[in-house]
Length: 137
Image (tube, rainbow, N blue to C red; front, side, top):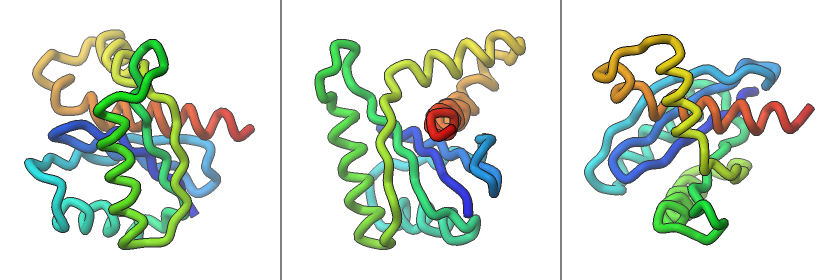
């Protein structure tokens, strides 16, 4: 079984998957959406089922002072919608710095600005998932 990491934004969801041993996170895809609708959640459930995922790790974007943000409310809605469609373990991880970490990693590897914009969400999902996996050991 694998773990899936989600970086949930207002127009994109970055997705990462672990290996079967749940030791290494890898970028998987970015889902673009305009509205939170059945089609969006059907795509997420399909990824879960097609990849033998048994736990979903979601990034909680708290404000820097630790307060609950609008992004946290969005993430909670996503959790509820996923659970309506599939009984699965969902774990929340503080992701306040995941996008910055992802951007810095992409800069280190000299990825162009245009390409960074396309992949930063799935790289952030990978950071969220790897953070969780590292804490398990």
